[in-house]
Amino acid sequence: MAEFVWLIPSLLLIIWYGFIDTGYSYSDIQYFAPLSLLSLFENPESLDSWLVYPLKSLNIFELAYIIALSVGIMKIMKKDFNKTLEFTLPVYGSSLVVWLLFITFLSINLGS
Image 1 (cartoon, rainbow, N blue to C red):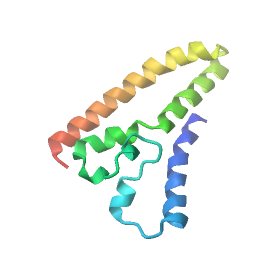
Image 2 (spheres, helix red, strand yellow):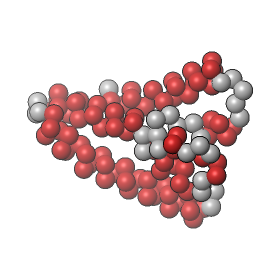
Image 3 (cartoon, rainbow, N blue to C red):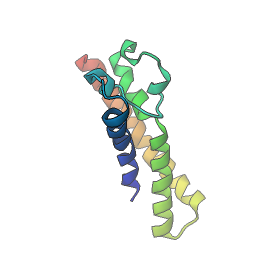
């Protein structure tokens, strides 16, 4: 059930560029990252390419996913929320950091 959190940014993209801002370019879609650290930059195209993915990935939806995952584990394991959050944060958080480092490494080495 926690995976449904990842539908929200896609729905926001469809609603935004389908109904609100219909004059968009490929670059607009590429840098569309609602509620992320990337959205704090006025001109994300000026950033180095290797910074884009990590900044897009660190967003409110990651936090919502961690909370939803903890709630799901809480219900299955019949533990309290704090215990499941203490389990989820290091496991998912370390995996996320390794993934971001891997993608950043590839971005730097492949130079795109």
